[in-house]
Image (cartoon, rainbow, N blue to C red; front, side, top):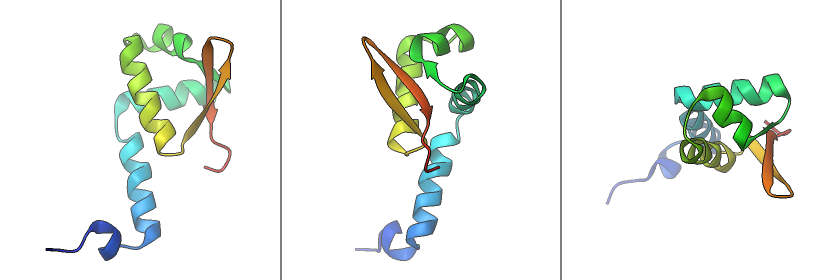
Length: 87
């Protein structure tokens, strides 16, 4: 059995690959631009601004959150997203 990517490449290379993969979609770039320009966003606002379905926005937000690029804060029944300070 061959080596895995975590065994072949450095931790830094693998982390950078994960980060770049997360932003390598035009919708995710647009979401990040909206969050940055608004300094925070609520998912519903992104749906209105980008014209994508709620489910599509949520799926992309999940990918960005899993990659550590954004964080979500629950505000009653909505989640407010912002850029993760450590990135």
